[in-house]
Each structure stands twice: as C-alpha cells, then as structure tokens.
Amino acid sequence: MDTRHILVVDDDAGLRELLQQYLSAQGYGVTAVADGGAMDAHLAVGTADLVVLDLMLPGEDGLSLARRLRARGNVPIIMLSARGEDVDRIVGLEVGADDYLSKPFNPRELLARIRALLRRSENTHADAAQPAHETRRFGDFVLNVEARDLHRNGSNVPLTAGEFNLLRIFVEHPNRVLSRDNIMDMLKGYERSPFDRSIDVRVTRLRRKIENDPNAPLFIRTVWGEGYLFAPGSDSGAA
Image 1: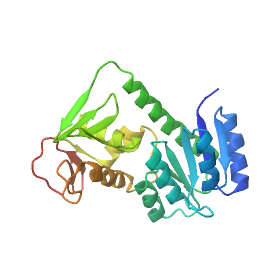
Image 2: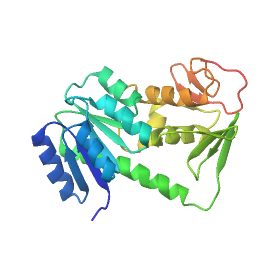
Image 3: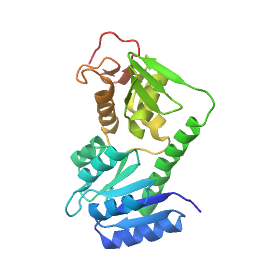
Image 4: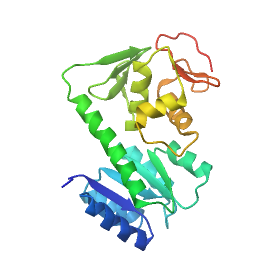
C-alpha cells in the first residue's frame, strides 16, 4: 500500500466522496475537506504529500490557499476549477500550483497527474541520495544539486520544487536554446501541461529569484520565437 497522503480541498461533497473512495482504492491515504479552515486544521496535526485544491471555495479561495501552502513549503499542488479560463490557469501557476485540471474531469486523468508529480518528487529525493556532491555556479549563485538548495553570496535563496527543477534544467544545458516543448518534456516526461503559457509563467517566477532586474534578465534570456537560453557567465543581458 502506498504510504503517501493526499489532501483534497473542495466544497463539493459529492466530488470529495468520489475522490476519497477512488484515490483510497489506488492505495493512497486521503483526507478530504471542504474549505481552508479544515485544511489548516488537518495540516496542524497531519501531513500531506500532495494537495488537490479547488479554485472556487467559500471564504478564502483556492488562490489564496495556494499562496499560503507555497509559503510554508514545497508540497505539490494540483488546482481544480470549473472555469477553464486561461487567466485562471495562469494565475494558478503564478501563485505556485504545479498543475491544473478543469472540471469536469476523469478521475483517471487526475490520478495520472498525481502519480507524475509524486514520481518527480521521488526522483528528486533519489537524486539527492546519490554520493556525488554536485554543485553548479553562475554569477554570485551556487546551486547544490544534491541538497536541492541555492545560495547567493552565502545566503539561501528559497526555491519551490518546480523552481528548482526548472533551474536545474537550465544549468545542465547552458548556452543552448531550449524550446518550451524541450523544457516541458524534461520537466514532466510524458505528461503534457494544459497551459500554453505554463513555461513562461515558471520562468517569470524563477527570474524573480535570480535576476537583479527580472525585466532585463542576464541569466535566463528569451530567444524570441524559439525559447530560452541560460547564460551562466553573462555580464550583460538581453531580453
């Protein structure tokens, strides 16, 4: 039996019951709650390896809850919404969600996305268990691949799991143009994102962490019409 625990936050009682039964049958531990207060109550005494979070909730909405979850750690977040509008998807990614699924959906698709995110988390831990102490340097930054941390002049720069994975791709492919499809393949393997702009949003979030001026980036450069290029030894930047 899978020992990982999934927290479902959705005000639709029928959907909560369906997901609790379905995901439990797949071997996961599942807690299903109706709102942010119940989510906080669970996290005060328990844990979650992944959160399935509805966008439209009574009281504090899913975007606000996602911001709070991201501020407290790197637990993977899948957002659910009946809207299906691009702006909601993009905002969901901007606040730190790892994936997004529009309602109605097939529970098997949600299961595939859960497995993909948890597998990425497992691979990350496996990488950290390797004996090699791999570090990559660029500018004033040192990325410790094993420890999964980034330092700038000795000070820690906090990264979410998604930001770390994206940065690792860039530092492992320096001075090479990577298309959005290239990056998506390396980030998620077979799983395809529903966001046309998902990589752009992730790059924007990462630039805020490593660029002195995210609007005039030195390290992660946009190559218009092609993708992105990581320039680790850059002294001057291009947009």
